[in-house]
Length: 398
Image 1 (spheres, rainbow, N blue to C red):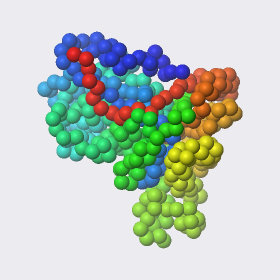
Image 2 (cartoon, rainbow, N blue to C red):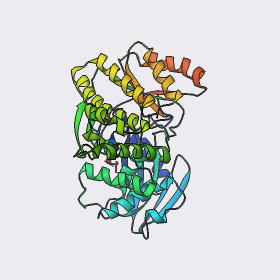
Image 3 (spheres, rainbow, N blue to C red):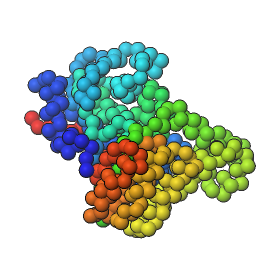
Image 4 (spheres, one colour):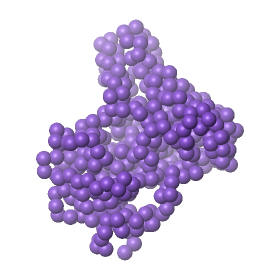
Protein backbone atom coordinates (compact mmCIF):
# COMPACT_ATOMS: atom_id res chain seq x y z
CA UNK A 1 0.00 0.00 0.00
CA UNK A 2 1.93 3.03 -1.22
CA UNK A 3 1.99 5.83 -3.72
CA UNK A 4 4.90 4.46 -5.69
CA UNK A 5 8.63 3.83 -5.64
CA UNK A 6 9.50 7.02 -3.77
CA UNK A 7 6.82 6.92 -1.11
CA UNK A 8 8.61 4.58 1.27
CA UNK A 9 12.13 5.94 0.81
CA UNK A 10 13.66 7.82 3.72
CA UNK A 11 14.00 11.56 3.49
CA UNK A 12 17.79 11.16 3.63
CA UNK A 13 17.70 8.80 0.63
CA UNK A 14 15.49 11.15 -1.35
CA UNK A 15 17.70 14.11 -0.42
CA UNK A 16 20.67 12.26 -1.88
CA UNK A 17 18.83 11.86 -5.19
CA UNK A 18 17.89 15.53 -5.18
CA UNK A 19 21.46 16.63 -4.45
CA UNK A 20 22.76 14.52 -7.33
CA UNK A 21 20.25 16.16 -9.67
CA UNK A 22 21.10 19.62 -8.37
CA UNK A 23 24.70 18.86 -9.26
CA UNK A 24 26.47 20.44 -6.32
CA UNK A 25 28.73 19.33 -3.50
CA UNK A 26 28.42 22.66 -1.73
CA UNK A 27 26.17 23.68 1.18
CA UNK A 28 22.47 23.04 0.59
CA UNK A 29 19.24 23.31 2.55
CA UNK A 30 16.28 20.90 2.64
CA UNK A 31 12.68 21.82 3.45
CA UNK A 32 9.60 19.63 3.51
CA UNK A 33 5.85 20.18 3.68
CA UNK A 34 3.18 17.49 4.00
CA UNK A 35 -0.05 17.01 2.15
CA UNK A 36 -3.22 16.56 4.12
CA UNK A 37 -6.30 14.42 4.31
CA UNK A 38 -9.45 16.02 5.63
CA UNK A 39 -11.37 13.82 8.03
CA UNK A 40 -14.49 15.97 7.81
CA UNK A 41 -15.49 19.58 7.15
CA UNK A 42 -15.56 19.94 3.37
CA UNK A 43 -16.12 23.33 1.68
CA UNK A 44 -16.57 24.95 5.09
CA UNK A 45 -13.20 26.69 5.24
CA UNK A 46 -13.99 29.53 2.85
CA UNK A 47 -17.26 30.00 4.72
CA UNK A 48 -15.30 30.82 7.91
CA UNK A 49 -16.30 27.45 9.32
CA UNK A 50 -14.66 24.45 10.97
CA UNK A 51 -12.50 21.71 9.47
CA UNK A 52 -10.73 18.62 10.81
CA UNK A 53 -7.74 17.70 8.64
CA UNK A 54 -4.51 15.87 9.42
CA UNK A 55 -1.11 16.42 7.82
CA UNK A 56 0.03 13.11 6.34
CA UNK A 57 3.30 11.37 5.56
CA UNK A 58 3.17 12.21 1.85
CA UNK A 59 5.11 15.37 1.18
CA UNK A 60 7.03 17.82 -0.97
CA UNK A 61 10.79 18.11 -0.54
CA UNK A 62 12.79 21.05 -1.89
CA UNK A 63 16.57 20.79 -1.76
CA UNK A 64 18.25 24.03 -2.72
CA UNK A 65 21.32 26.22 -2.59
CA UNK A 66 20.64 29.88 -1.78
CA UNK A 67 22.15 32.46 -4.11
CA UNK A 68 22.39 36.23 -4.31
CA UNK A 69 20.35 36.57 -7.50
CA UNK A 70 16.80 37.95 -7.09
CA UNK A 71 15.29 34.93 -8.81
CA UNK A 72 14.38 31.28 -8.34
CA UNK A 73 15.31 28.40 -10.61
CA UNK A 74 13.56 25.13 -9.80
CA UNK A 75 13.62 21.66 -11.31
CA UNK A 76 10.59 19.40 -10.79
CA UNK A 77 12.22 15.98 -10.60
CA UNK A 78 8.99 14.08 -11.24
CA UNK A 79 8.36 15.99 -14.48
CA UNK A 80 12.02 16.42 -15.47
CA UNK A 81 11.31 20.09 -16.07
CA UNK A 82 13.15 23.25 -15.03
CA UNK A 83 11.45 26.65 -14.73
CA UNK A 84 12.41 29.99 -13.23
CA UNK A 85 11.09 33.42 -12.31
CA UNK A 86 12.59 36.75 -11.29
CA UNK A 87 11.48 38.81 -8.31
CA UNK A 88 11.50 42.07 -10.26
CA UNK A 89 8.03 42.90 -11.56
CA UNK A 90 6.52 39.75 -10.04
CA UNK A 91 2.74 40.13 -9.81
CA UNK A 92 -0.48 38.33 -10.77
CA UNK A 93 -0.82 40.70 -13.71
CA UNK A 94 2.51 39.60 -15.22
CA UNK A 95 2.02 35.85 -14.73
CA UNK A 96 2.35 33.86 -17.92
CA UNK A 97 0.68 30.60 -18.93
CA UNK A 98 -0.29 28.51 -15.91
CA UNK A 99 2.47 26.20 -14.64
CA UNK A 100 3.55 24.42 -11.45
CA UNK A 101 6.13 27.19 -10.88
CA UNK A 102 3.22 29.58 -10.25
CA UNK A 103 2.77 28.10 -6.78
CA UNK A 104 6.35 29.03 -5.91
CA UNK A 105 6.23 32.40 -7.66
CA UNK A 106 2.87 33.20 -6.08
CA UNK A 107 4.27 32.41 -2.64
CA UNK A 108 7.22 34.73 -3.27
CA UNK A 109 4.83 37.48 -4.38
CA UNK A 110 2.53 36.99 -1.37
CA UNK A 111 5.42 36.95 1.12
CA UNK A 112 6.81 40.17 -0.30
CA UNK A 113 3.35 41.77 -0.30
CA UNK A 114 3.14 40.87 3.40
CA UNK A 115 6.42 42.67 4.06
CA UNK A 116 8.56 39.56 4.47
CA UNK A 117 12.06 39.53 2.97
CA UNK A 118 12.71 36.75 0.46
CA UNK A 119 15.85 35.21 -1.03
CA UNK A 120 16.58 33.58 -4.34
CA UNK A 121 17.71 30.00 -4.73
CA UNK A 122 18.39 27.17 -7.17
CA UNK A 123 16.60 23.99 -6.20
CA UNK A 124 15.14 20.62 -7.04
CA UNK A 125 11.75 19.46 -5.78
CA UNK A 126 10.14 16.05 -5.53
CA UNK A 127 6.77 14.92 -4.20
CA UNK A 128 5.11 11.75 -2.96
CA UNK A 129 1.68 13.41 -3.12
CA UNK A 130 -0.21 12.37 -6.25
CA UNK A 131 -1.22 15.46 -8.25
CA UNK A 132 -4.99 15.67 -8.62
CA UNK A 133 -5.70 13.30 -5.74
CA UNK A 134 -7.28 15.94 -3.52
CA UNK A 135 -4.50 15.59 -0.93
CA UNK A 136 -3.33 19.19 -1.33
CA UNK A 137 -0.15 18.94 -3.33
CA UNK A 138 -0.45 22.62 -4.24
CA UNK A 139 -0.70 23.76 -0.62
CA UNK A 140 2.26 21.56 0.32
CA UNK A 141 4.36 23.14 -2.43
CA UNK A 142 3.35 26.61 -1.26
CA UNK A 143 4.23 25.86 2.36
CA UNK A 144 7.57 24.29 1.42
CA UNK A 145 8.27 27.39 -0.66
CA UNK A 146 7.66 29.68 2.32
CA UNK A 147 10.58 27.98 4.05
CA UNK A 148 12.88 27.95 1.02
CA UNK A 149 12.22 31.63 0.26
CA UNK A 150 12.60 32.85 3.86
CA UNK A 151 15.71 34.86 4.73
CA UNK A 152 17.59 33.14 7.59
CA UNK A 153 17.47 34.98 10.88
CA UNK A 154 14.31 36.95 10.13
CA UNK A 155 11.29 36.40 12.39
CA UNK A 156 8.74 33.97 11.00
CA UNK A 157 5.10 34.95 11.48
CA UNK A 158 2.73 32.69 13.41
CA UNK A 159 1.53 29.52 11.71
CA UNK A 160 -1.91 30.90 10.89
CA UNK A 161 -0.40 34.03 9.37
CA UNK A 162 1.98 32.04 7.16
CA UNK A 163 -0.89 29.80 6.07
CA UNK A 164 -2.91 32.90 5.14
CA UNK A 165 0.02 34.25 3.10
CA UNK A 166 0.25 30.96 1.18
CA UNK A 167 -3.53 30.97 0.71
CA UNK A 168 -3.29 34.46 -0.78
CA UNK A 169 -0.75 33.15 -3.26
CA UNK A 170 -3.24 30.59 -4.49
CA UNK A 171 -6.20 32.99 -4.42
CA UNK A 172 -4.63 36.01 -6.05
CA UNK A 173 -1.68 34.70 -8.04
CA UNK A 174 -2.73 31.21 -9.14
CA UNK A 175 -6.41 32.18 -9.36
CA UNK A 176 -8.08 29.48 -7.25
CA UNK A 177 -10.32 31.04 -4.60
CA UNK A 178 -9.62 28.33 -2.00
CA UNK A 179 -10.05 28.51 1.75
CA UNK A 180 -7.21 28.30 4.23
CA UNK A 181 -7.56 24.68 5.38
CA UNK A 182 -4.99 23.06 3.10
CA UNK A 183 -2.19 25.51 3.81
CA UNK A 184 -2.99 25.54 7.53
CA UNK A 185 -2.95 21.74 7.83
CA UNK A 186 0.35 21.51 5.97
CA UNK A 187 1.87 24.20 8.18
CA UNK A 188 0.56 23.14 11.59
CA UNK A 189 0.36 19.33 11.47
CA UNK A 190 1.10 17.37 14.63
CA UNK A 191 2.10 13.72 14.72
CA UNK A 192 -0.73 11.42 15.78
CA UNK A 193 -3.31 14.20 15.73
CA UNK A 194 -5.93 15.83 13.57
CA UNK A 195 -6.33 19.60 13.70
CA UNK A 196 -9.62 21.28 14.57
CA UNK A 197 -9.16 24.52 12.66
CA UNK A 198 -11.39 27.54 13.12
CA UNK A 199 -11.20 29.22 9.71
CA UNK A 200 -12.67 32.46 11.05
CA UNK A 201 -9.96 33.09 13.64
CA UNK A 202 -7.15 31.06 12.00
CA UNK A 203 -6.60 29.17 15.24
CA UNK A 204 -6.55 25.46 15.95
CA UNK A 205 -6.69 22.77 18.58
CA UNK A 206 -5.23 19.29 18.27
CA UNK A 207 -7.45 16.22 18.37
CA UNK A 208 -5.76 12.86 19.05
CA UNK A 209 -6.33 10.15 16.48
CA UNK A 210 -7.50 6.92 18.15
CA UNK A 211 -4.69 4.39 18.43
CA UNK A 212 -7.11 1.58 17.56
CA UNK A 213 -7.99 3.01 14.13
CA UNK A 214 -5.93 3.14 10.95
CA UNK A 215 -6.22 6.03 8.51
CA UNK A 216 -6.53 4.63 5.00
CA UNK A 217 -6.79 6.63 1.78
CA UNK A 218 -8.28 5.14 -1.39
CA UNK A 219 -7.27 6.90 -4.60
CA UNK A 220 -9.99 6.57 -7.24
CA UNK A 221 -7.51 6.98 -10.10
CA UNK A 222 -9.75 9.80 -11.31
CA UNK A 223 -8.00 13.15 -10.73
CA UNK A 224 -10.28 15.62 -9.01
CA UNK A 225 -11.82 17.84 -11.64
CA UNK A 226 -13.37 20.64 -9.58
CA UNK A 227 -11.60 23.33 -11.56
CA UNK A 228 -11.24 26.97 -10.62
CA UNK A 229 -14.48 27.92 -12.36
CA UNK A 230 -16.64 25.29 -10.61
CA UNK A 231 -14.95 25.96 -7.27
CA UNK A 232 -15.41 29.70 -7.53
CA UNK A 233 -19.05 29.22 -8.59
CA UNK A 234 -19.81 27.32 -5.41
CA UNK A 235 -18.10 29.95 -3.35
CA UNK A 236 -20.18 32.63 -5.06
CA UNK A 237 -23.36 30.66 -4.37
CA UNK A 238 -22.49 30.58 -0.67
CA UNK A 239 -21.75 34.30 -0.70
CA UNK A 240 -25.11 34.99 -2.32
CA UNK A 241 -26.79 32.94 0.40
CA UNK A 242 -25.06 35.03 3.06
CA UNK A 243 -26.08 38.27 1.36
CA UNK A 244 -29.74 37.27 1.14
CA UNK A 245 -29.93 35.95 4.70
CA UNK A 246 -28.12 39.01 6.08
CA UNK A 247 -30.83 41.26 4.65
CA UNK A 248 -33.14 39.80 7.29
CA UNK A 249 -30.69 38.62 9.95
CA UNK A 250 -28.39 41.31 11.40
CA UNK A 251 -24.86 40.21 12.23
CA UNK A 252 -24.57 37.54 9.54
CA UNK A 253 -21.31 37.97 7.62
CA UNK A 254 -20.58 34.33 6.67
CA UNK A 255 -22.35 30.97 6.73
CA UNK A 256 -20.51 30.36 10.01
CA UNK A 257 -23.10 32.71 11.55
CA UNK A 258 -26.07 30.70 10.24
CA UNK A 259 -27.57 27.79 12.16
CA UNK A 260 -30.17 25.33 10.92
CA UNK A 261 -33.09 27.25 12.43
CA UNK A 262 -31.99 30.51 10.81
CA UNK A 263 -31.51 28.80 7.46
CA UNK A 264 -34.99 27.25 7.66
CA UNK A 265 -36.73 30.57 8.28
CA UNK A 266 -34.86 32.22 5.41
CA UNK A 267 -34.98 29.40 2.91
CA UNK A 268 -37.80 30.99 0.93
CA UNK A 269 -35.46 33.90 0.12
CA UNK A 270 -32.85 31.67 -1.49
CA UNK A 271 -32.68 30.19 -4.97
CA UNK A 272 -32.97 26.41 -4.61
CA UNK A 273 -29.36 25.66 -5.60
CA UNK A 274 -28.11 28.30 -3.16
CA UNK A 275 -30.27 26.85 -0.39
CA UNK A 276 -28.74 23.40 -0.97
CA UNK A 277 -25.20 24.77 -0.85
CA UNK A 278 -25.95 26.63 2.39
CA UNK A 279 -27.61 23.59 3.96
CA UNK A 280 -24.50 21.51 3.35
CA UNK A 281 -22.16 24.05 4.91
CA UNK A 282 -24.33 24.77 7.95
CA UNK A 283 -24.81 21.08 8.78
CA UNK A 284 -21.20 20.19 7.97
CA UNK A 285 -19.93 22.56 10.64
CA UNK A 286 -22.05 20.66 13.16
CA UNK A 287 -20.70 17.35 11.90
CA UNK A 288 -17.13 18.54 12.48
CA UNK A 289 -17.76 19.20 16.17
CA UNK A 290 -19.68 15.95 16.54
CA UNK A 291 -16.74 14.08 15.00
CA UNK A 292 -14.32 15.63 17.49
CA UNK A 293 -16.53 14.33 20.30
CA UNK A 294 -16.86 10.88 18.68
CA UNK A 295 -13.07 10.59 18.28
CA UNK A 296 -12.56 11.60 21.90
CA UNK A 297 -15.16 9.10 23.14
CA UNK A 298 -14.20 6.31 20.76
CA UNK A 299 -17.77 6.23 19.46
CA UNK A 300 -17.24 4.25 16.26
CA UNK A 301 -20.92 4.05 15.37
CA UNK A 302 -21.19 7.84 15.50
CA UNK A 303 -18.11 8.20 13.30
CA UNK A 304 -19.68 5.95 10.69
CA UNK A 305 -22.93 7.94 10.69
CA UNK A 306 -21.15 11.29 10.52
CA UNK A 307 -18.92 10.30 7.61
CA UNK A 308 -21.90 8.84 5.75
CA UNK A 309 -23.96 12.00 6.27
CA UNK A 310 -21.08 14.18 5.09
CA UNK A 311 -20.61 12.15 1.92
CA UNK A 312 -24.32 12.16 1.13
CA UNK A 313 -24.45 15.93 1.64
CA UNK A 314 -21.47 16.53 -0.63
CA UNK A 315 -23.09 14.30 -3.25
CA UNK A 316 -26.66 15.57 -3.09
CA UNK A 317 -26.50 19.15 -1.75
CA UNK A 318 -23.10 20.47 -2.76
CA UNK A 319 -22.90 18.24 -5.84
CA UNK A 320 -19.13 17.69 -5.81
CA UNK A 321 -18.96 13.91 -5.55
CA UNK A 322 -18.62 11.62 -8.58
CA UNK A 323 -19.57 8.12 -9.65
CA UNK A 324 -16.02 7.01 -8.87
CA UNK A 325 -16.05 8.44 -5.35
CA UNK A 326 -19.51 7.02 -4.67
CA UNK A 327 -18.40 3.57 -5.83
CA UNK A 328 -15.30 3.67 -3.63
CA UNK A 329 -17.34 4.61 -0.57
CA UNK A 330 -19.93 1.91 -1.27
CA UNK A 331 -17.24 -0.76 -1.60
CA UNK A 332 -15.52 0.32 1.61
CA UNK A 333 -18.74 0.34 3.61
CA UNK A 334 -19.30 -3.32 2.77
CA UNK A 335 -15.96 -4.39 4.29
CA UNK A 336 -16.05 -5.61 7.91
CA UNK A 337 -13.73 -3.48 10.00
CA UNK A 338 -14.23 -0.27 8.00
CA UNK A 339 -15.67 2.12 10.56
CA UNK A 340 -16.26 5.18 8.37
CA UNK A 341 -15.77 6.23 4.75
CA UNK A 342 -16.39 9.36 2.71
CA UNK A 343 -14.94 11.46 -0.09
CA UNK A 344 -12.24 13.91 0.93
CA UNK A 345 -11.02 17.05 -0.79
CA UNK A 346 -12.68 19.43 -3.22
CA UNK A 347 -14.46 16.69 -5.17
CA UNK A 348 -15.20 15.24 -8.61
CA UNK A 349 -12.53 12.57 -8.27
CA UNK A 350 -9.53 12.24 -6.03
CA UNK A 351 -9.62 10.16 -2.86
CA UNK A 352 -11.76 8.81 -0.08
CA UNK A 353 -10.75 8.78 3.58
CA UNK A 354 -11.46 5.71 5.68
CA UNK A 355 -11.21 4.93 9.38
CA UNK A 356 -10.39 1.23 9.67
CA UNK A 357 -9.88 -1.19 12.51
CA UNK A 358 -6.30 -2.52 12.62
CA UNK A 359 -6.12 -5.81 10.73
CA UNK A 360 -8.87 -4.86 8.27
CA UNK A 361 -6.64 -2.74 6.02
CA UNK A 362 -5.79 -5.68 3.75
CA UNK A 363 -9.44 -6.69 3.45
CA UNK A 364 -10.27 -3.15 2.34
CA UNK A 365 -7.49 -3.19 -0.23
CA UNK A 366 -8.60 -6.59 -1.54
CA UNK A 367 -12.22 -5.46 -1.86
CA UNK A 368 -11.22 -2.29 -3.71
CA UNK A 369 -8.89 -4.11 -6.08
CA UNK A 370 -11.47 -6.82 -6.79
CA UNK A 371 -14.51 -4.58 -7.33
CA UNK A 372 -13.62 -0.99 -8.11
CA UNK A 373 -12.07 -1.57 -11.53
CA UNK A 374 -15.07 -3.62 -12.64
CA UNK A 375 -17.40 -0.76 -11.74
CA UNK A 376 -15.38 2.14 -13.14
CA UNK A 377 -12.73 0.84 -15.53
CA UNK A 378 -10.09 2.69 -13.50
CA UNK A 379 -7.09 1.47 -11.52
CA UNK A 380 -7.26 2.44 -7.84
CA UNK A 381 -4.59 2.68 -5.17
CA UNK A 382 -4.99 2.00 -1.47
CA UNK A 383 -2.52 3.10 1.18
CA UNK A 384 -2.22 3.66 4.88
CA UNK A 385 -1.16 7.13 5.98
CA UNK A 386 -0.05 8.55 9.31
CA UNK A 387 -0.63 11.98 10.84
CA UNK A 388 2.70 13.83 10.92
CA UNK A 389 4.36 17.11 11.81
CA UNK A 390 3.84 20.19 9.67
CA UNK A 391 6.21 21.95 7.29
CA UNK A 392 9.72 22.99 8.18
CA UNK A 393 13.44 22.73 7.54
CA UNK A 394 15.05 19.30 7.71
CA UNK A 395 18.49 18.92 9.24
CA UNK A 396 20.93 17.29 6.83
CA UNK A 397 23.90 15.18 7.84
CA UNK A 398 27.16 17.00 7.32
